[in-house]
Image: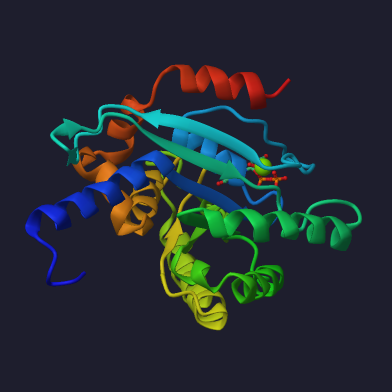
Length: 266
Ligand SMILES: Nc1nc2c(ncn2[C@@H]2O[C@H](COP(=O)(O)OP(=O)(O)OP(=O)(O)O)[C@@H](O)[C@H]2O)c(=O)[nH]1
Ligand SMILES: [Mg+2]
């Protein structure tokens, strides 16, 4: 910023920028292979109930859920407290979906290339019990060639950690067993090597969780907030320490009704 600007002018510019961010809202997207629990993740993370399926492709088009975060007190613009900011989350169809796999994947990939460059944070979901990353490496590399700026906006979620070998999740304390934790550590090293390094992601963030057992969700929510661009992060500023719960209290109750109407299982 030029040194010749007065303090008042600088303030005005900053406030304008913040106001722009506010109007635009915050946008998250969830992406990855079919059946990796993308919709389930959003269901537990945002306390909604969209349709999922144990055997068939469940999400065939982009589902958009939009919630108003109320009473945001993080910042003042022109002496007016900002109260409401919109958070939109896009649930994408799975890339490897469909009977004619290549064709459908390609069609969905086009959706990815159009939508993802417009969002602030992408959660790219892997499965802890699937060790083949070819599909992810292929599509991530292609995507990043088309939209290199996404390098700093993609974080990796490792879902299904309850299913990692030897699948002996401790239900009493709702935690992975010692052996699962040790296997998870190795899995994360492979993710680092094959996804972050090979695809050249600059975020270097991998978050293990289980949507089924609601394990690791608080950390997942934190990582999404941490990855939000600096200009928009203030929206979450006064939610600490119980980020997600505090956040959900701020979302207008009508939001859940609306999502249920549009995307609930029939
Ligand atoms: N064991 C286990 N099952 C899970 C987990 N997350 C999701 N599932 C199950 O996996 C199946 C697929 O979940 P979805 O949420 O529909 O997966 P998706 O990635 O949205 O699938 P598409 O929309 O078809 O791309 C469902 O039966 C979920 O109950 C998890 O963490 N652990
Ligand atoms: Mg889905």
